[in-house]
Length: 109
Image (cartoon, rainbow, N blue to C red; front, top):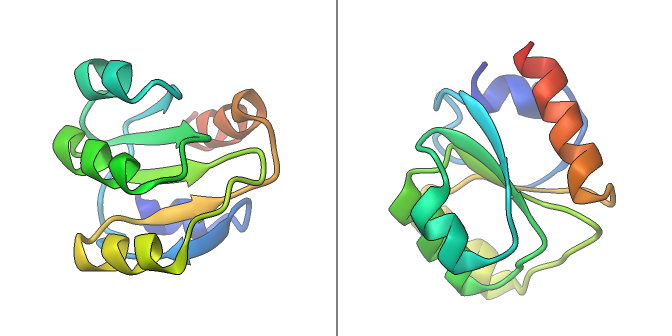
């Protein structure tokens, strides 16, 4: 499944769409940035509530396919602009992290 397939599923709100041909191979749920930095697998759909600029750094470092901000987490416009500059797809949902992860996993099969 690609990031574009996830977007087309209309489960999440798109904050920034970039490099949507990236393949999503796993779901990764984590809110502790240091743990995500060391454990997030490449090409993962990372689901978190950490809505700050450091999330983008970790997403870039781990080569996440996309980031889903759960539980209504919002970002400042400047962070969304930075995501666009760094080709990081950002999605948003009001769902709890676990439920958002289940939605992505169901699409992965």
